[in-house]
Image (tube, rainbow, N blue to C red; front, top):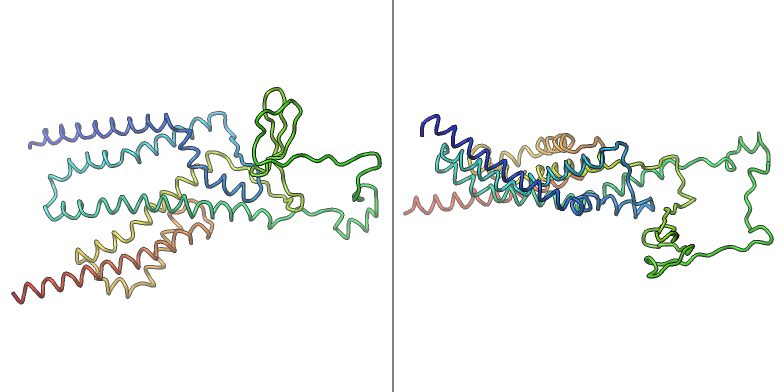
Length: 329
């Protein structure tokens, strides 16, 4: 092929790549409500566990729309990644040697599986634990109560504002609300109940259910989480992508051994330096500077590194055995 024909081939491949990616983005935009629910599921689980209102806020009029568009674009690119990579491969394959094509065809599917395994592991295990821990830190800073402050009592004395009634005033009776596991089938105006799973007070009025979250008085804190939609989605997507990249460690280890760049024994001997590099890489990949998310990524990467060494040693032993048999023949 001439230089002009190469450019025409590249133009055709790029057009097909962009068309496929556009179709994937449109499809993801159609089901964006489900995608957003999946992305926010770990946070919703952590909010319920910490007895916090199951909601996040937006601080910009266009934030909700922009987040939905970004999620549709990201997910569309991920869904159509095999098609896009095939177009790139079809253009580049002609310039590769046969053994290079062999290694790409052999390890690329494994790399894709490990990437999605890392993303799934992040959503199922890491994100719920990370959100639960990060939200529970608020209890480390309790709100000071004036009646428990010795200096306040000495200065103000036992004024009326610091007395707390322990019984209901005379002539009144406590009101109890039914505790339900869901909404009544046919509520009437003015009917109120407590939704136990959601920990919310609900009142039916004007044909709608009005709700308010319940909070524990003994866990009052100066810190009130006000998580924004954009920051939450960015944190989730960046951390999931980081885990997908981090799970490529076994592929790198095996390739280095099979291409005779670094032997498994040398990599095993440099384990302490590799672990240090993994910790540094986890700190760079994770979107937040907290040590929790970094260690949650570094530990699986180290285990995958050890697993890659096991596979690399097995491949090297098999190669030596095969070469020994061929030499004897």
